Image (cartoon, rainbow, N blue to C red; front, side, top):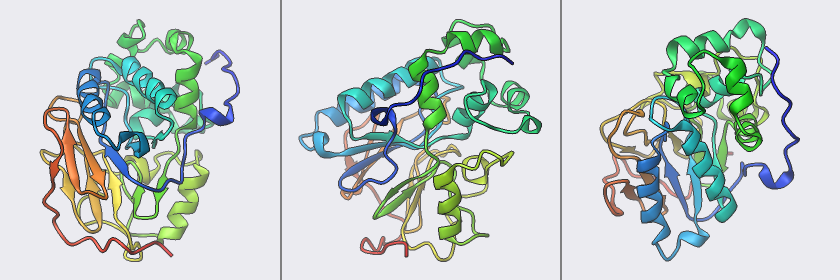
Length: 274
């Protein structure tokens, strides 16, 4: 597929991968611009918002009604609030790979996988293109959208939380996984940290000494524990888009103001990854 060339990414467009200080972690947006607007309105009214990092946990596109609008909102937020970053979700990777925005191997067959299994119809429609018209979509995606999709990091690291879309696997040491995530190994056909469905509330590497925050698998309620934080409460199909304020341990949603969260286990807040 011949894809239009997009301009180089400037340093100001690169998303932060190492952050510190107050933060709000936001679950999968999946094109739900109305929910995102409500949530961001609540956050923007906070006196401390200017000093707070905003971290999106991946999956900006697919399923919901306006994936293009979701990407546009994130870009607008990055411009207005520089303490904004995001990690790549499997849906974001599928779109980027299908449009040849990232160097994935041909045998990974991302375009056919995205078309068949990712409920991408709303993404094509939001750009005014028929589903499956990859050439048309490549032409319709603005440069800044393409640059965002192509540069989304696979991990954002905070001294007190690791942000990765699906989670870390129990099979490999944490340091090994972080190295792969920092480098974004596009040779992998199905990166576990973006795609695995079984990295639930009780799954993390034994040597990981701080919580891992993710979205990816939809849940009826957020899970906040000492090892895992799971914040996809919509799956792109409605519900409450959810954010977690740290270090306050408060949940804020598209439908509710900030309120204390019931933690499933004590979080030893001073621990760090070696």
